[in-house]
Image (cartoon, rainbow, N blue to C red; front, side, top):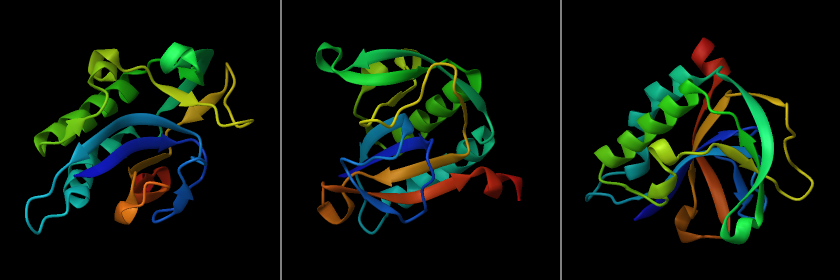
Length: 166
């Protein structure tokens, strides 16, 4: 099983970029999932192929940051909520559908579809503030354990607004 995640990065990243799991660039999680691979098939490539059309369609969507909240056990993870937006919700749902079409398992089903609450987790001093504007201009598929190494993350596919406008 491959542990993968779709995100919308708020900070610049590069396709193929690797970063420590403790130093995520700011991002909106779209859907986190596990997916297996039939013999000889690359599950990341298959899910990326299904994700490309909705990702490209969502690029350029303008979002607004709302109030702070606490997620996780006892609300211990500080986040900046992102106001709901129909294009963001549609992207999330289409990505969930793509994962399910390949037999993938969404890791947080209670926070999926109608339970989806878009947010950006704070990372130390890095955070968004209420009223900030965010544009979906970098949507990515990230490997949560490239080559089995759970201490790093790798950007497998990156869809950018520049690519969509070309």
